[in-house]
Amino acid sequence: MTEWHSAFGWLLDPANWSGPGGIPVRIGEHLLYTLVTLVIAVVIAVPVGVAIGHTGKGRALAVQSSGVLRALPTLGVLLLLALWLGLGFGPPLIVMVLLGLPPLLAGAYAGIDAVDRATVDAARSIGMTGWQVLSKVELPLALPIIIGGIRSGCLQVIATWTVAAYLPLGGLGRFIYDGLAVQNYAEMLGASVLVILLALIADALFALVQRLVVPRGVVVGRASDVRVRSSKRLATTSESTAG
Amino acid sequence: MIEFRSVTKQFPDGTVAVREFSLVIPSRRITVLAGSSGSGKTTILRMINRMVDPSSGAIEIDGADISTLEPVRLRRGIGYVMQNSGLLPHRKVVDNIATVPLLRGEKRKDARARALDLMDTVGLDRALADRYPSQLSGGQQQRVGVARGLAVDPNILLMDEPFGAVDPLVRAELQQELLRLQHDLGKTVVFVTHDIDEAFLLGDQVVIFKPGGVVAQIGTPQQILAEPADEFVTRFVGADRGKRALHVRSEGGRDVVLDADGRPAGVLVGAAPTRDEAGAAAAAPGASAQGDRPR
Image (cartoon, rainbow over all chains, first blue to last red; front, side):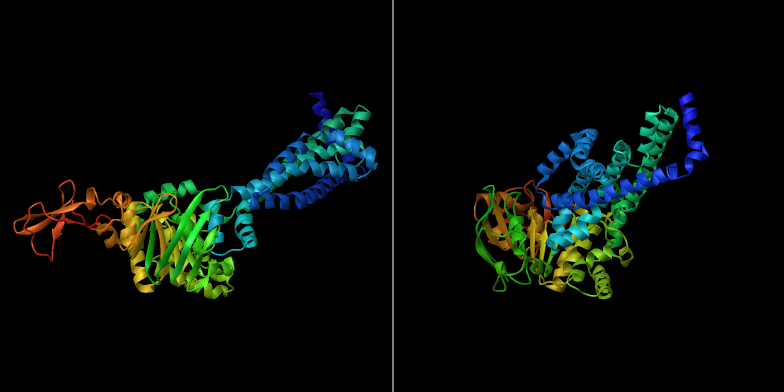
């Protein structure tokens, strides 16, 4: 319990909330790193995933390379890249992007894949071009799952950016590595709590966005509800439509 | 007029869906393609708007070979109605109906106004315009599907088992509605079904398929019932049993028509009484589908 007490003591100490190495600055750095990583990962993974979902080609390749990327030991790759490219923002950024790619890629192609094939076929049959099918049908319907992929990628990236302080860079990982060096466990624990909070808040925000982007017609009645309802309302329906 | 000239479709896996198929589909009539699943009827339908391209042979619409036409343009000029409506779930009813006119570059206001008119045409309450497809019953969704098919006032309307997924009561209602619409609009309708009652009820011309994309018989419902081409057609249309194998018995000076089980199906009118007691066989196309069989 004493560790927790001292951790909260560290968190509540005003001295830790000011200055160039203070908590707000580190949180800002951490968020900035995460944002840059996510933007790059989205730019790479979403178009590729969407293309795979739309064309149905290359899925095996995507699944395999996602598996490989997931299996990479983050710290090992980080050190390798740092030795190769030198210190700085580049190596950890590459590692974090690699870490973020699999969930984003999976979200993008699974999202497009989950769109009812009959709906897509219908859209083509009435004369939509491939691009129109993608932009007017597949993307709007797939968006919640695509955002879901970004959400889980974001969670991993926020958590893992702490490792980058090893290099050394800023971010909340700074406190953890600095605390470790001087055996200040209160600081380490306090910083971990901050990382967890940050991750949870980001996750909650994405959950909210995910709900907001569900197209309205899809929210109002799930397919299963409709079937139950329509059979119950059958009698009234035939009356009202006959008149 | 749509003309198929010895059209064959072989899929990459080697399956032959349609074999040497030739047919003239007359304008302003309903042509029904009937057959069990795997008989290639849907493939034939989808060739008309180039959702499927034939491996060999040619298809012409009003004398123009459709392989020279751009698929997207062609499809925007042909109405398409499918099973389970195929509506866009994230768009309101009125926007679903207006989809193709908007794709063709019509003004939003005009397209919406026309969509509302079409809702009247297909018997939908305008109050449903701002609902989403998932808020409608199956029958209402199919009506929206038909309205969407009619949105660009196409000459040709392709219907792929449009009433296959609704319950029998609503189906009968939609069938009658289609006949009424066809009476008013006079489209060239190509209608796919596996339900022979539906085929005989709606079709001016009926094409019966055997499995593997082979035509068993082409004709009017009357011709097919009167002279089934072979054993397969006889069985498929059920002329050898139940409600179609009717016979006439004279009772109290009137001719009563009985089905295969001896239940009365109706009374023969406008014909001279038969002398023979267990008399001539009579055929009643679509008797049950029209629901005029007394209980």
